[in-house]
Length: 147
Image (tube, rainbow, N blue to C red):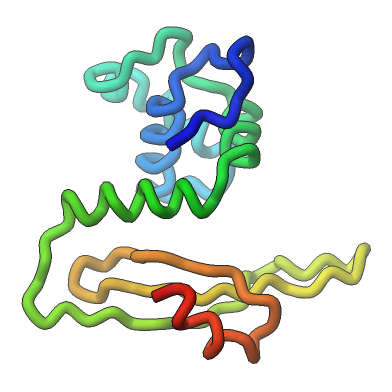
């Protein structure tokens, strides 16, 4: 995955940032402050396999790196990693599911709620991919693109 930061802003390694974020989310973190708190709480454990030359990144750093990163590129890299480590089950089912994200409607700017469609590997219990759709009615047309 390409590092979206300019050279002078690369205090923390991209791999360290991504691994901490993934581990934190798996453990229930639901925002960048929670990701940073997870990293600080698990610093000794993380240090066993990450470099962390400047310690745990701040929540602002996590937010900045992920906001600058390409979601498509991240998804492709993450899926490639999952395919390398996930067990393949005979007869594995992939469920397609459309959701409206809670609290994504912005009353102040009258911005519509965010609608997503996802592919879920039922036996491995992992999301294989997801895609934002413009309207809930566009889920069916988004399925081929997601697949």
